[in-house]
Length: 182
Image (tube, rainbow, N blue to C red):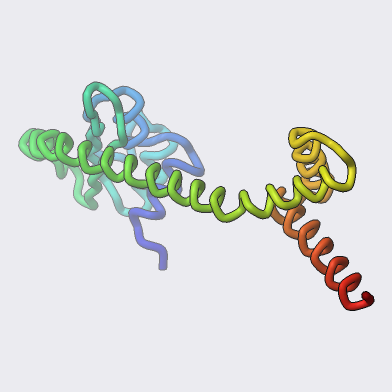
């Protein structure tokens, strides 16, 4: 069975695009409901989640220097589960949580950039070799040879590096075949 919060998130973000977490992030304010089944703020989300046995929600935006980096939502099966004190605690928790979420986003972006740069460093030599081969065959400029690689890539719906690797491999096979024949 699917975890309940994952099911609620799917309803909120995928199916309906409506709910407390979205409202908290978009409107940059804390929102709550003690009776989701009859909630007018989310007329489709509330009743649907209420049928799952979830009746209360408290959602707090995660703000960092005035920028929304997310929102956090707590659900309860009880009606009117979140008091003013719970709201205050949620809002106090939101500040350090916003820093943690922001740091996680920065880390994820840095990891993605590292992955992209590593890929570029490993694929660039093959692409450069293929450009050299095309230039040697056609007398074209570097830019023209790279444009030709891109055209082949797009025509074949294949990454440029795959086309480049194929060209280099074909050139090596031909060179070895000529060497053996000599």
